[in-house]
Structure formats: C-alpha cells, structure tokens
Length: 171
Image: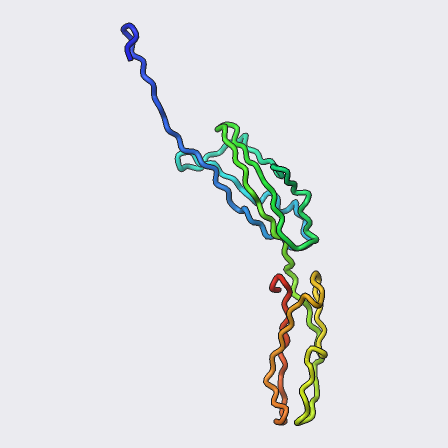
C-alpha cells in the first residue's frame, strides 16, 4: 500500500497456543490429608509446540461452583473439582475437571481355625463358620470370601483349605 512516497506493510503472524493438563485423576488413600494431593495436577503452556514458562502463572482450585473442601478422604468415592490455570503473560487460561479417587488400600483381615478334624465319610463342615473376616472400612457382609479345598472326605489324609477375602477396592 502506498501512501505518498512511503510504503506500509503489515505482518500477520499465526501463533499456536495450547494448555496441556497432566495428572487429572488422582488416587488418594483413605483417611489421607487431601492437602498433600491438591498440587499434583499440572498445567503446561505450549507456544508453537514448545513448553514455555510464565512466572506469573497461577491456579484457582474449585471453580465452577466446586470446592476442594467437599473432598472427604474418610469416605471412599470419586470427587470432582474444577481447576483453573491462568497464564497472564500470554492472556490465556483453561478450566479442567480434576478427579480425586479416595480408595481404601488396606487389605481385609482373615482369622481362621488352624486345624479342623473331620471324621472319614462325614459331611464336610461349612468352612465359613471357621473363619472371621474384617476390614478397616467395609462391613463384613460387603467382603467377598472365597474358599478352596480338595478334601476327599472318604480318604484319610491331611488337607488344606485356602481362604481368600477381598473388599470392594480389591484389596
């Protein structure tokens, strides 16, 4: 474009920017302090496929009517909180749903009679009556008890009964 005897030119530049979130699903052990897990999600800014640093970058926890205060680590479950990251130098922000999965990591306890004597040709006992199961979180009726054996009640011998108990978190 000419304006008098001077030429003006305009440069149009296309810059690609993307915010990449990592660690958006966090596993939290039952009864843990949630504050130890709030800073695990990370947002990074890519400008023209290069990660850049913005010293003014900050997070806001619990946007869109959510709050980290509603995460109860005493109750197993999934809690969803929205985080916002702002990169002020680049005038860009992003909101991301973060999922906190509170899980029971402790295995149930099995207490069983060490030895059971059975007369030959007698009916096998209900082995559930010879075991007590308990868990730190789940009720006894929520536990899955499996019993395995290869006892031949018409053959004299020593046999083993295998007890396996799991809770809803597969401990």
